[in-house]
Amino acid sequence: MSLLVAVTGRNNEKLIAKLQSLLPNEQVVEWGKDVTTCEVEFVLAWNPPSDLWKRLPNLKAISSYGAGVDTLLAQPELPDVPVARIVDPNLAVSMSEYVLHAIGHFKLRFNQYLNNKNELLWKPRRVKAGNKVGILGLGQLGKQVAVKLKDLGYEVSGWSNSPKTIAGVSCFSGEKELTTMLESLDYVVCLLPLTENTQGILNKSLFDKLPQGAVLINVARGDHLNEADLLSALESGQLAGAALDVFSTEPLPATHPFWQQQNILLTPHVSAVTSVETASEQVAQNYHRVKQGQAIHHAVNQKVGY
Ligand code: GLV
Image: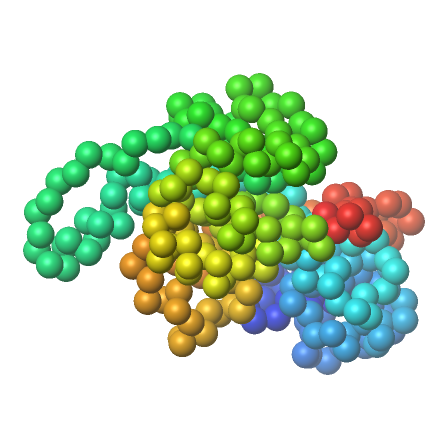
């Protein structure tokens, strides 16, 4: 039995070394190197090649190398085996820090001061009024971001597919309640899983339900956003700004109009970066479970997509 690391687009040296140290008696192999595919029973994957799966006749389980599994589940030839994701409390910490910074960027007017600095302009302004933050998606990350912002004094609401209760956070669910929540927000944060139902949810119809001058923060997936609708909403002033960490095409192409938008804070998918340490520990544990014929931890429900 061996563990195949099919994590593309990054240097996996540390990851492989960590996994090998946790699984000293097992074969840890990397996609693209000399792999005996029939021995592979467990794959750790991130953007794996789509022709990978048919070469693995003995595959028993897959783990995403991240909190999200959408790109994995979208692979047409994904075999019918359990899929796990990484659940790391530290991801919620960095996600909360990112969201807080993104709010502050607009609330404290750092977006304007950055430009003023280029023009040697000393122009103090009051902070932007409004501290109502709505979180779309109250899963592992959304829930903890909501609680952290609430503890800092923000007026926080959250919206999820199924009804949730979080102390001190106003919780909404279902289509109608989404409209009610949006109507009062200063900041809307997308932390939804990407599914058929949530693809393109950040669109004109949603933006129009927000008060004029609200700010969008998307830290979920690029495909949640209708990019043309965002550009129009920024142009018309319906939205005052957006902080975007995720994009339909990553890396964002140099010709993309988002690069030129002064009111878009743009970062390269860094809001909650998987920790090599935590991911390796969870993968090693799941590998042992598979070997012993036990169910894996943090398995996703592949029908609902998260
Ligand atoms: C990052 O986007 C992840 O899904 O972990």
